[in-house]
Image (cartoon, rainbow, N blue to C red; front, side, top):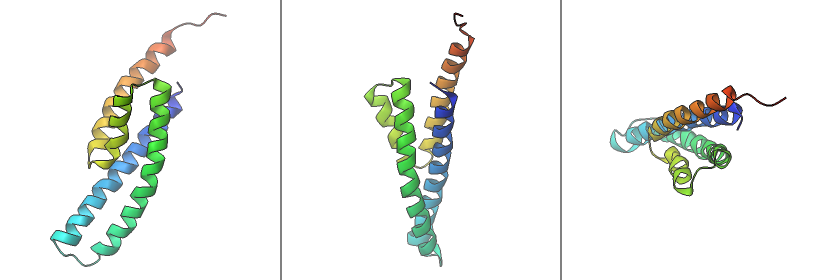
Length: 112
């Protein structure tokens, strides 16, 4: 597996996570605090999160299929983009796991 596959996933995990946190804050501002302007903010961030979550799903699925994850782990990673702050936690755990595997395979000499 190439490091670029992990990098794409990591970028989209952060983007999705940030947008979901912003969306959550917007919904709180709109419905609980009755803030002016929260309606438009929530609409824009909600649409952006929805479209970018689809990109996140594609990249996370690509990563999982190349890493040969079991279905349960794959679903866990895919759903992380729907729970505020979960994308950050899951991304960190997955990145540590896969980076150690990438460095282990990079150290293995190949035959000439």
